[in-house]
Length: 117
Length: 114
Image (cartoon, rainbow over all chains, first blue to last red; front, side, top):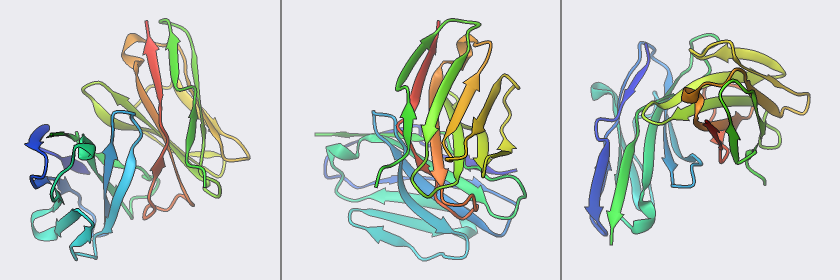
């Protein structure tokens, strides 16, 4: 069965520090998609990135970077030089590609990130 | 381009009543998904509609139901409300219901059952 684990429930850092959010997933399929979403206090989930299982290249977008490692089933998210506006709950999610009728996202429990000024 | 919209933003009901939540997908998207985010339970998949039909259902009782209209908007109905139904209900949409697609979320409806 699909499962996503975000072991860090809460992280608190001081502004400008780098911070890494961990995500470990379980799936029996060879084709799958991984996502990161940000949930600010307003509640809306904001899409950050999608990665398919065949693309293990790391990605960088501004201060954000993602490290995908199939060997350890991990898809970690790093924020460099964190800012107060990065404070939110971050969710990692998994979608399998070949399971018939199973179109859905399976989410981790989320990591609450607090950036202190 | 407008994102996913949901109404109402907040809803207060009493136990035993029915609640109706509405969602309009991004223009051009045919698939709509519903998720429940209850305190302490994380985000749980509820329902998936595509082209007017229910395609997949999460582990929720039958009193959670919905439909998708010809314009691809969707409605989630919760009958015989229970206190534990209090949660943030999030709607998402994707282009054509393919598993590779990104789901884009709306702002949610906060349901409080008293």
